[in-house]
Structures are given as structure tokens and as C-alpha cells.
Length: 431
Image (cartoon, rainbow, N blue to C red; front, side, top):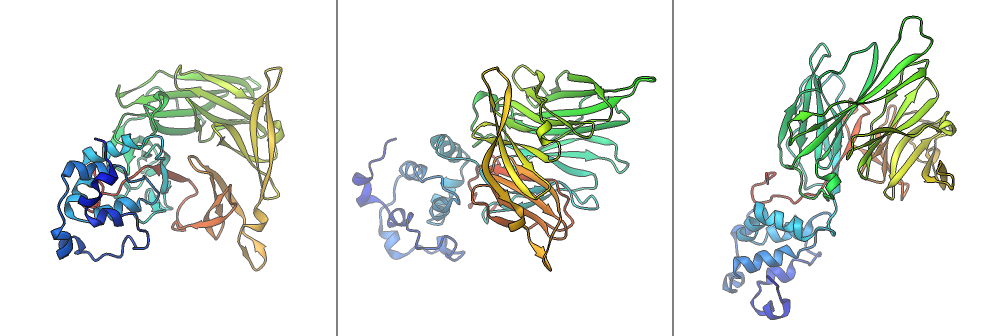
């Protein structure tokens, strides 16, 4: 239905005209505001519900959603429309290309003592139910509105995985992939993502849809009498639609003296990229293609970063590296292919000097324990000993505190999603 605002103006309740007036605080109305209509509002003609829905559909998807909150406070009828699952789906579809998922909070992997994951909101309007907490629960990854939780028993043996949507409240349990050997040394990482990602999903309303879980394990074995170790990196993918794990894809290298370990991957396009550290100084980048399930070496020439900590980041839709050196400086690198088809890393001019940003105690800078790139944002997370966790915006270079409990570990995951508050029920709606 097309709406002509000029032809409708004489019949529109004055509340619609005031919706965009930001001079009225959104949360300043009393709790019983919707129960006390004024005589003037009672005298105004009521709009057909279909017409009201069409008007509300055109409210912009801003951050925070102040227009939607104001509209829900006008009357019960409007609040009911805004909270209806059908309207919310229409709203998502109508604003595709204009709305974007936003940072709603952070998930702490696990608290000291095994208390389980913890969610810390960054907005006042998104307060989801608590994450499943039990001894042996730890958050491994967060992407496309979902959180992946690993479940282990008290003796440390694996029990399974849980995929949670904080928006819908849905939880799905799944087992670990079969036929993964337990070697003397192994490391692993797990990733969750929308199953429609490679088909162009914009992740505005896919919280309850199908998903994939990518399981990556690196292990090594020593053959009696052999000089080198044999290192294997194995990948399996769980599909919620198929309800099963895929066959293994494996990368093998036999030329290392020490065990390797893999780091948390980053999703760029239709592929996952992760750093594989081998020996003490060798780092390579592996690429896992989600379309053909191929596992390949993306870059094995990272000797320039031998004395630095590096993390993979997304730079304008391409693969980048965030380097943290021993002088507390942060550099960004982007990768391009030269005329000979060889990948070359080029360092950007923008440098972040943490010496001027990290807090000090009695003139001494707090030690930096861990640094993470918050995928889906232009933010890096710093874990400072005795201070806690800080978020550094790479664009503004501003440092702010992330209010986690000090018993939280250093595995901090950003929770990025598109969300409309359900003000009618006072709780999250399941679409």
C-alpha cells in the first residue's frame, strides 16, 4: 500500500506528527501513559489498522530505535502492531539495504571458576535472558546473532555444543564431530555462522534460521625415529538443516619440530581464514572455502611478523592483519597480489600507540595480557592486568571500559545483531 502523507495529514492522530520530535525523552513517559488517553486524542478519528501499520513501516531503522519506542508508547494498538511477528518480518524486509546489524553487547567466554558465559549489554534496550550457565560451559564464538557454547564434564571431557540466539531465546544442542583423534598435543577452534551467508543473507532476521558450525582441530604425532613431527589440521562442518557433520577436510605438514595451534578464524566473503602457528616462530594463514570445502595455504610468508602478535581482521571486505609489537604499537596491514601473482603485505600509515591510551598506576603502565579483534566492528579488545577489559575504536582511537566482572576470562566475543524491542510483552519475542 502506498501512503501519501499530504492527503492523510488531516486524519492522522497528532501522535504520529510528534513521533519524530526528539525534544521529548523516549523513556520519560509514566508507566500508565498508554492507559490515560487525553480528551483531545479520544476525539480524533482513528486510522485503519492497515494504514497505521504502513506508516509505522516507514519509521527509520536507527540506532538506538527511538522512533519505534516512541511509536509503541502512543497506545496499546500501536504497541501490538510493532510487536507482531508478521509486522517485524515486514519491517526487516522493507529496510533491507538500509538497516545494518549493530553491536548489542559482549559475551565473556567463561568466568573464573567455571561459572559459565556472561553477557554484558552495550545498549539500554537489549536485555536478553541469561546465557546457559553451568560448570563446564564456555562461549567459543559469536556471529550472525548466535553464540556457540562448548560443554565439558567436570573431568574436562567433551560433552557437546550449544548454539544460542539471544534475540529469539532458541537453543539447539549438538554433539562433537566423530572420528577426531585425541593426540598428545592438539588445539581447536569452533565457529558458528548463518547457513545462508554464502547466498547473500544480510543477517537482519536470520536468528532462528539454519546455521553452520565449523570445527577446526590441529594435532601432531611423532613417529618413532623421525626427526620431525607430522601436523594435521582437520575441518568438519555441522549443518542444522542436515542435522549431521560433514566429512573431514585435512591439511598435513611434516616439517615442524614443535606442535602447532590454530587461532580463532575470521569470516570474509565465503571463506574462513585462520592463523596456524608452527614451531616457535613460523606462522601461516589457512583458508577454508565454505562453498567447495577446500582447505588451502593462503600465505606462508609471514616472517615479517615473527616478533609480533598478529590477528586477522577485515579491511574493507578484504583480508588484513592487526600487528601488536613489543613497543605497544598497533599497525594495520592489508594484502594485495603483485604482478607475479605473489601475495604481498603492505603496512598502513595509521599507527595506534597504546602508551598514550593504556591506564597507569603511579606512573607505571598496566601490562597488556591479551588483544583481540572484535569481528563485525572496528574495535579491538584489550585485556589489561589489574584493570580489566577495554575497547579501542580503531577509527577514533578512543579507549573505553567494557564493564565485565574482573573474574571473567580474556575470551571476549562481540554480539552483533539487528534487533527491535518487544515493548508489548516486556520481553524478547520469538519470530
